[in-house]
Amino acid sequence: MNNKATINLNDKAYDIDIIHGSENEVALDISKLRSEASLITLDPGFKNTGSCKSAITFLDGEKGILRYRGYSIEELAEKADFLEVAFLLIFGELPNQEQLNKLSEDIKERSIIDEDLRIILNSFPKSAHPMGILSSLTSGLVAFDPSAVDIDNEEEMYDAILNLLAKIPVLVAWVYRRRRGLPLEYGDTSLGYVENLAKMMFQRPNKDYIQNKTIVNALNKLLILHADHEQNCSTSTVRIVGSSHAGLFASISAGISALWGRLHGGANQAVIEMLEAIHKDGGDTKKYILKAKDKSDSFRLMGFGHRVYKNFDPRAKIIKVAADEVLNDLGIDDPILDIAKGLEKVALEDKYFVDRKLYPNVDFYSGIIYKALDIPAEMFTVMFALGRLPGWVAHWREMRIRKEPIGRPRQVYIGQTHRSFSDIKLR
Image (cartoon, rainbow, N blue to C red; front, top):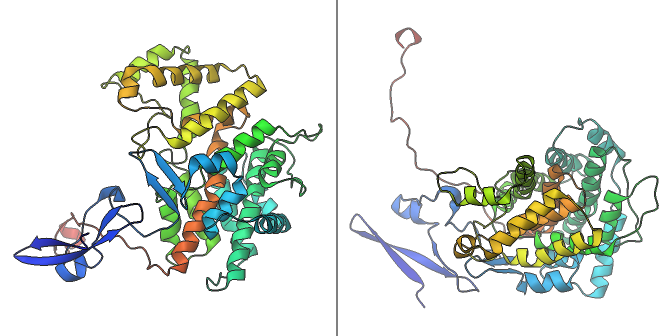
């Protein structure tokens, strides 16, 4: 196994260390290249740049593999609940029953929000985007817990992490309910994490709340499937903000803002907006399939294919089953969802899509489920953020414990060379 590579530049050789990952990934360590050779690498979007070593998530897009701490996403989605997965991601191992019980009880103890934060929430107009509100409220939590977290103090670290896991679901439910004009709820401490989330969101003031196991199961799977996805845009944002020693709440708030974009967490919202546009145009799916195949047409089918997975998104296989269960259980008659099922059928059978591996992805099916649950499209990314919370926390914790240096990318300057200042009268 080679441990060195060589770069030859201007008749001089520079040795580069070769790093081997536990899943046979190979990387060139160019961290000393600038100091030794006055040379940097250029990689727009960091598509082929490893920013860190991480033991949290393994992703192989070519083979359609996703594992959290070594456990396959398929097995976790089938056998675990979201809190177990959160514990696994953050602390490194699946919890035993005692640890899981303690985690659940500690979260319940911390699930109260300072009433002043409710005032901040009410100051936003109802037209404000839920992601902007959630980011602001998460950042606002700092005001009620201003002390910096001592990363060498396990109790302080645990308390900060548990505060986020406890309070963010309440804030998510509040953002949803305020948009719907419903009274704000704290839920029920006798319920589990996901069951309580469902009650906080969907309980109506004039009806007894009845828990729907199919909905809870779908939400549990959605949260698990979104819990982490390696060094994506929002996770990298959390790590680079945290590398400045910004606090946990501020770093997570930055991650929420990064997730907001349509090319990242906003993709499932874009799916529903596309389906609604097709419906408004008469609902002719064949017309839009032809548009998607036409290279000269700017139309894109949202929710099909994935920039990382070159095969079927493993998360999509899991959530497709949950989507079918939700639609069957609720018996919804919605033309938007009928269009979605039509597009799905074509993508799974049409040679054009199959050959190009343009399969429905997790954003496609998650959008369908949220639509079926009558969650507004603007709230989809908020639900994504709640699922991604454990992954963000895990990466922030890993980065701080390892005392990684502050993130500071370089650039290749392409502007004007040195020129003299000219007086304004001469310009």
